[in-house]
Length: 277
Image (tube, rainbow, N blue to C red):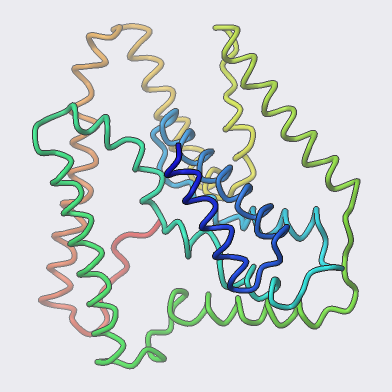
């Protein structure tokens, strides 16, 4: 707890050092930690890994909507656009960290294997991206990561700074956020107290995320399959079917790997989109 507390304090002071006003930094970090915790809990409860708290810019947007921009210094505006969930939390790493303890129990040496695989993957990806920029020129890599996202954020930053119609603390918007939080807490209490209450509070909180809308059918199929298996075969059939589910994941990754080799050998100029959301 001491290490966690010192880490949070360091993050708040770091944000303040790069331009955040102190109360904005404190509010932002609170929302940041809540978003990470929600994503971790959702992954643990559902196994659905395509939920990232930074996509909705929750900390940034709530800070602007609730506290307003009337008293926000330009350095804070720049900081809100330059420092976000993706900068600090990455993509998928924070959500998986709490599950390392579970992995440890599945076999000896699993944790070092996961750690070194992660380190090698990040190193190779970074070096390959740098090589591409030098080899092809970063400006020629006309995609969202290289051009779309950075330009969009700078444009939004300039628009927010240039907007003379500054907002103030809005009691109405604050009330809406508090009501939403209250309903989510109520769902959590009901789920903990009553076995017949199946609606998860995180599902309510993340229902508007576009990832959930894209994958809603997938989630429905998985839920229906699991319910039918447990209903007619019980836990024994469930355990027998688990390897088939693992096989679907391994088979998909293997197919993407084979397709990548095919592109590397026969379609070196343009290639194909092999894996997306």
